[in-house]
Image (cartoon, rainbow, N blue to C red; front, side):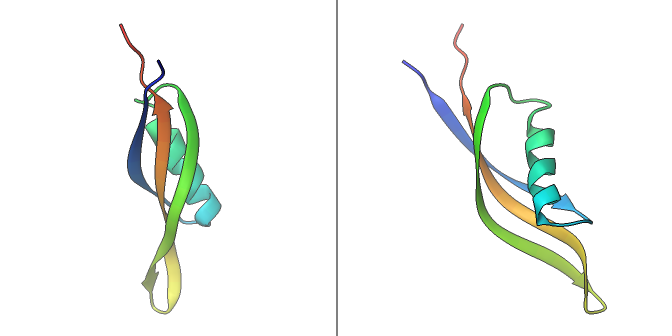
Length: 68
């Protein structure tokens, strides 16, 4: 039987929301194995002086749990 776990993360980027999503997956991949999918919950941004200075993507990443 396959068990899938889902974690919620926030990725960020100074470039765009796509990079923010990619960064979340790349960072998760440093400690999580068997990532199978990503679901983008929402996009947000940090604004300073009426300009976006940081793009953020709130994502859910699904991965297969390995058993011993």
